[in-house]
Length: 569
Image 1 (tube, rainbow, N blue to C red):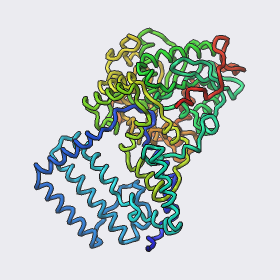
Image 2: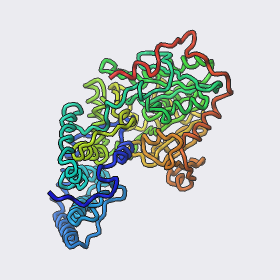
Image 3: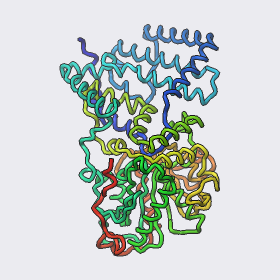
Image 4: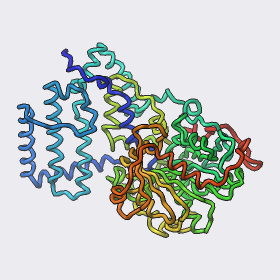
């Protein structure tokens, strides 16, 4: 066995910070979706095969182009390079070792030929997009970095550890086969316990109904703003993404600046709750708001919501608008798309796939978040599958220890009715068509929701594309502030001050074109949490002495945060 060229410093072990960065930029997070069916992938390959049969001349042209490219690779004249940001080929051997350089360039020539055929085919544009995705599943799987002999970093580690990494990798593989449904583990789950190193902000559960628990957080300042704030998390994930850990907690940050904070913790439904729909979640929120108003003595509240939780909050706001009810004073909607989008989740959305997804959850009674995460991983396989394949099995490293990844894997379930309603909302753009959607029997119009709103999106968000969030902002009436964070889906949320790489874009004029908005926007270094906190404080009323105890005579404390529902599996 000969050693591959010595890799550059910090690349031999596939730095886990890179793995975490790639994963957190692409995890599903709290977004419901239709899914990815094997028959849809096969249909894409069938369409490609039909193109090959109908256009044999194009096949010959692409084969000839591939042969020319491979000859240039073997002669050392090729200049193929992986896309910028592709960290699979960071090891120095891919540049310095002639064998690995030729392997890399041959692989790139092969992928270029396959995708070139798709690009030059006569398929319609949407079918091309689906076929490109299906083709990428194959090319990504056969990347040389996924095999021991094709991965110089793994070979070097095997040499240095005398094969101990492969023994550890086999243990990891067996564990994943028996405990993780055969998928490479994304996180070391044994490193985290809710209430011990996650969800640590002190507080009390002050209200509970069959759908949710309401947590009131303890003030850390002598005075607080009079108007309370309620966080509405997504239904498909647990609430503690808003209270991950000290210095990474939105709750901790806002409480430290004198805001009275309450957070909804959704119950994890089973098939017995299959009939919970949007009305059930909105009704539960109405009860929680009534409790907050009684506890604080405030006539109105400020709501902050994310993803599917933002859809629920928008539905509630639309319902209040039909009633002329001013209970909501202001609202934040984070990474929230309210209608059909061109993002990764919409790639295979058709009436047939939507009907199949609804039928599947109807049969089971629920949509399981674990299954959804597993399917979604194959929408971003380099970041969410092969990334861990190399780390866990070839390198023999333990999965990363990172709180966001643990939270993402700690997913919950959606009731069948709610899942079906979400599909209809996206497929038919019900939120964005005035009067098309009913909440508690009332047709809603977001244009009539006129209180102040603050929207947050991520410029590299593949899950809820920022232009979709921008479109949602323009659908509401009243004043709508929009901030675009220079990060991805979940990283847009967990963005505490102090990160030197953080920046965001602002433009007070919500022009019709999102591209024009971005061109006219100004870039600001730092976290969007800071201007958001100022925005929230300006709408939070006067200062008053902080409460000395949680709850009220009517709503007495039930148990300490993080409560009971968050622990349910």
